[in-house]
View 1 (cartoon, rainbow, N blue to C red):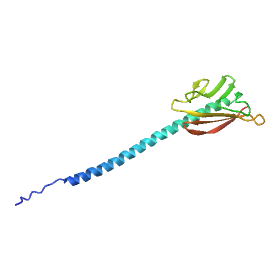
View 2 (view 1 turned 135 degrees about the vertical axis):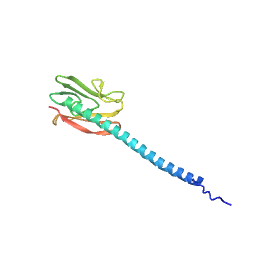
View 3 (view 1 turned 180 degrees about the horizontal axis):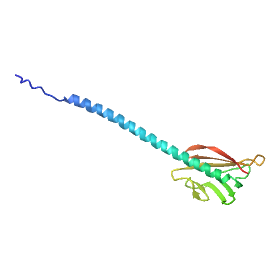
View 4 (view 1 turned 180 degrees about the vertical axis):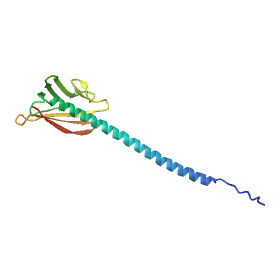
Length: 151
């Protein structure tokens, strides 16, 4: 004879189903959080690279602004360094060192996280208006050429 006691609680099967559902939900949440974190790291790296590139373009623009003498490259040539003489500043030499960092007179302009694998400086032929074009590859990304006419 039964006393009419009703057992309450969950069966083992129900507990296993709930644990499985909880694992799926937590796994999805962890995957979503990982993707958000990874995306923010990629974005931060891209922004830092673009900031460094803009800084380089501004520095080169500054070096070529005003009454400057371009020592290298010669007219119609392409080189991997830019050598100018700027009144009040003296000689300014932009080149890439052995650590793949862009330097100005030997002092690094880029941070250690930045790698410049290609730095191309091109000067127009003597028959055309005097201009210097600079392009570079930074962290595997090609940055557009900037052209500055020299007075």
